[in-house]
Image (tube, rainbow, N blue to C red; front, side, top):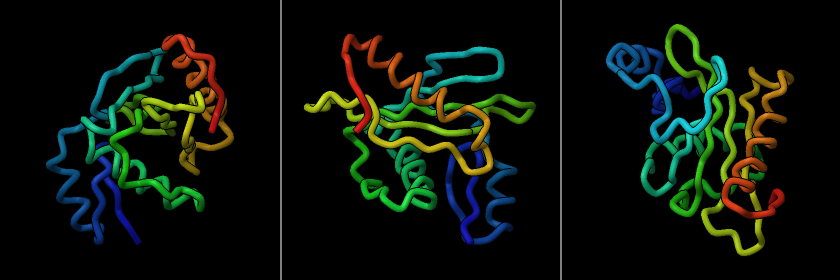
Length: 145
């Protein structure tokens, strides 16, 4: 069993360690830039090179749910777009997608994950639509990997 802080994504081996951490953790949203907000829903843009620890932990979290997820240490070459829903405690992660900063094949999406307890609520479609919006913003016509 792994215990993960819902805000900073640090992981712990016991619930007691997580509880101590949670009482001290001041992070209430992903690091990076909030690039979209609509009501209680937000997207945060993170650079895998700049927000290295958070992005690595996000990729490791994905590995728990995606059998084919293989790259979780070489995160420098990726941008991460984290979808959150804000509640009274902070911005709760519901999913994310990543894309290569420079994709020779023109891909707009490398990995996508909606957390299991948030599935079947339309977040996957929102993530995919947003990946196309990012491609359009960047002046690229792209598709998924």
